[in-house]
Image (cartoon, rainbow, N blue to C red; front, side, top):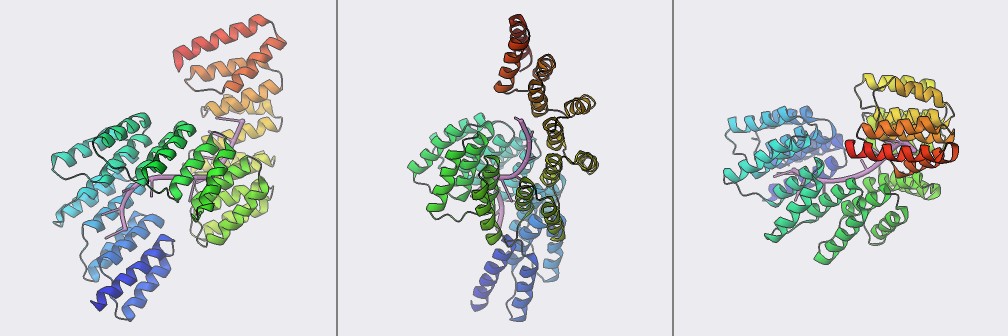
Length: 456
DNA sequence: CTAGGGTTAG
C-alpha cells in the first residue's frame, strides 16, 4: 500500500514534468525514485511514452517499450493506445496500424480507445471515408462507443471540411441524449472559426454558458481567435479580458493568439506586456511560442534579435517549422532584403516545406517596396499561387493605376476557382470607371459575374 | 497515461 502510494506520487511528478517538456528531469525523477525504493509501474512508463511521443517522436516513444520489458513490466492496452496516438500525431498511419498488430500479437485486446485513435488517424491524414469505416467497425464489433468516439467523429468531420455536417451530427446526437462536453463545444467552435462565423461562435458560447458547462482556456482561446480572424479585435480582446478576470491562467496558446492579434492591429504596447508574461510563464517555450517571439522582434525591426532567437530555439532542440521560415522570409522582405529572402525561399523549398505563404510574403514585399514588375515577373514564372497572391498584385496594380492588368488578373483568379475579396473587386471596378469609359467597368462586372457562375 | 486550442501573407 505504501509503495503503491509512492508510485502514484512518482507518477504525478513524472506526468507534470513530461507535460512541460522536461523529459530529462522526468528521467531523473525516475532514477531518484528507484534509489528510494519507489519502483515505476506501467503507468509511469505510459506517461513517459506520451512525453517522448509528443516532444521527440514516435520512435523515441516506442523505444520506451524495450525499457519496460527490461524492467519486467508488460505493456498494457493504454501503452499501445498511447503509441497509436503518438503515431497519429506525426501522421503515420503505418506506425499506427503496426501498433494495433503488435497489440494483437501480444494478446492484448484493443479497446474503444484503440479504435478511436485509429479513426482519428484516418481523419488526420485526410481519409474521412476510411475513418467512418472504423466507426462502423466499432458498432459492428459491439464495442460501446464512448463520448470521445463522438468527439473524434465530430472533430474529424470539421477538420476534413464537413463543418456543417459535423454541426448537424452534433444536433442529432443531442436529440438522442448525447451530453456534450466542453471538448465537444471546443471542437465545434474551432470548426466554425475556420468558416469565419464569429457570430455563430458567440452564440455557441452563450449556449455553453446556459448549459452550465464551464468553459476552459481552450474555449476562450478558440473564441478569441475566431474574432481576431474576422478582424473583430475589440470583441476578441474582450473575450481575452474576460478569461483573465475570471481567473483563467492564460497559457502559451492564448499568448500566441493574443500577441499575433495585437501586432496585427497595431497595439504594440499591449503586445509587449503579453510577451513579458509569456517569457515569465514559458520556462519551456515550444516552437510556436518562439515563432511568436521571433515575429514580434521582426515587427519591431530588430532583425539581429530575431535571428539569435532562432538559434536559441534550435539549440534547445526545437525544429524550425514552416511558420519559422515564413516569418523569417516575411521579416527579410519587410526589411527590403529580397536577395536573402529569395535564397531562403529556395532553401525552404528544398527542405520540403509548403512555401505558398512565404512566396506570398515575397510577392507582397516586392509590391510594397515598389518592385511591381519584378513581382509580376516572378508571379508569371511560378505556378505557386492562391487568392492572396492575386490580391497583393491586384492591390499594387491599382495603386499604380494599371487597372486593365488588375482586371485581367482578378478574372484569372476567379477562373481558377478562387475566392476574391470584395474590396479588390471594388477597387478595380472603380479604377476602370475613372480611368477608362463606363463601358469598361460594365464589361468587367459582367465578365466577373459569368466567371463566378462558371468557376466558384 | 489515450479526444479539443496557438504562431506566417492580402
